[in-house]
Amino acid sequence: MANVFKNYQATCSASDATMYTVPSGTTSIVIGLSCANKVAATHKVTLKLGSKFVANEMKIPNNSTLHPIPSKMVLETGETFVIKADAAAKIDVILSVMEQS
Image: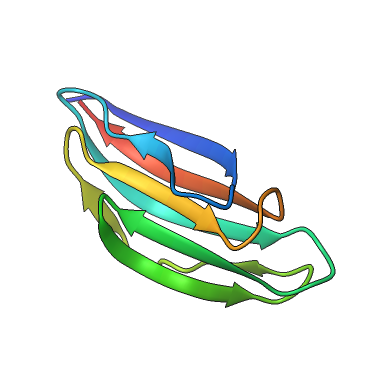
């Protein structure tokens, strides 16, 4: 079983967008998540595992970064990590995973 560490990067849009899909034959462990508000106004981010909320409209203060997942999460083949913000292009997200295949 191979373990590979990877980072996935995205900028939130104002509608649900799949940031990550677990590849076939793989189990992924989320080991970190960073949400950075790049502007001088507070914005909200919503994070989902498939259709289930991990964080719903979590406020991120202006020019701040939050790490909203305090522990590891396990994702199975085909599961998706979905992101959305209250305004497009204001929040950058970095998802760090270890993929086991």
